[in-house]
Amino acid sequence: ESKSKSISIMAKILDGLKVSKEIKKEIRADVDKIVAGKRRPPHLVAILVGSNGASMTYVNNKIKDCKEVGFKSSLIKFSSTVSEAELLETISELNKDKDVDGFIVQLPLPKQIDQEKIIMAIDPRKDVDGFHPENFGKMALEMDTFLPATPFGILTLLERYQIDTKGKHCVIIGRSRIVGKPMSILMGRKDFPGNSTVTLTHSYTPHIEDFTKNADIVITALGDPNFLKGEMIKKGAVVIDVGITRVEDNTEKGYTLTGDVDFESCKEIASAITPVPGGVGPMTRAMLMKNTILAYKTSVYND
Ligand code: NAP
Image (cartoon, rainbow, N blue to C red; front, side, top):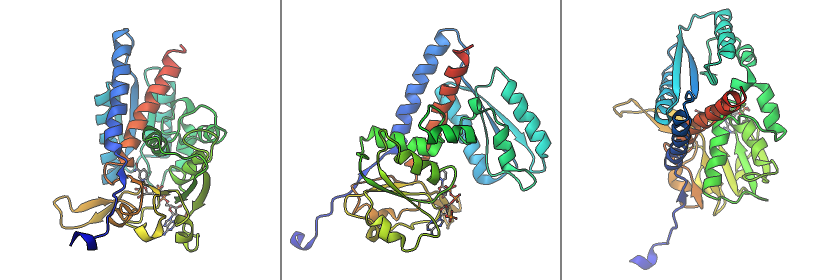
């Protein structure tokens, strides 16, 4: 009976939850030292507009993470009818506040507010999301800056698992400003992780499987549940799943968080794979903490 069964070697799980815990522990140790030296702890402020379910969860998690690593955190809430002027005024105050090291404006914002204007108003030195064009430009030029949390989390995961990226073909699906596009730049930079040959694909890419089948590393960030099937990847590929979509079902919560990767079929073919949940998500959370302590160190220690 056993003879007829083919031996399948399961991909290595890139455990983002475990690595994120390690990173948070490292940050906590750093903060404990800072506080023991009679300095104030780092302080992150989150601005939340409206009551979008996913946004509220994200912000609450960020506050929770701050507590865990020993940061001070503040939450500024606005109703969904807040004016752009009011929001800009708050940003201007946070920019000036010496007690605030970094702040984030949870996206998306309601229609009456110009997202670009808001991002542009954030002092790049406090832009711990790494969304300001100055920081994006520095990233693209391989200068020191805040990397956007999700790409930073993926790089760190690849680094901690010592995934070889040099000379590899990396195919990215999705070109958003916060994930796909920066990821494509970072994987192509002259560094580790990096030095990959990058193909950036999107909704206008015909026959996407022709690209993914030739990829050593596939990074999916499109937001289409179970999009990437095992038959679309090469044997031994490394698969990084950024997608998180709430797929409605009959569970108690009413939905299940689902990735862009069909985990069941891909895990049989890939050499390494991130799960959802427990992969890129927790890494993203940890990297916001990392950026905040970086902001703290450049501001407080330069005073
Ligand atoms: P987004 O702004 O929604 O953009 C999606 C991108 O995917 C676009 O570039 C789009 O192409 C492309 N795309 C859509 N359908 C496609 C298809 N069938 N084939 C090829 N490309 C396709 O993306 P995002 O904000 O980066 O989010 C992507 C997913 O990641 C979402 O599920 C989101 O919830 C998740 N996410 C997770 C984390 C995390 O921490 N794990 C962080 C951020 C986002 P066009 O440009 O042509 O429209």
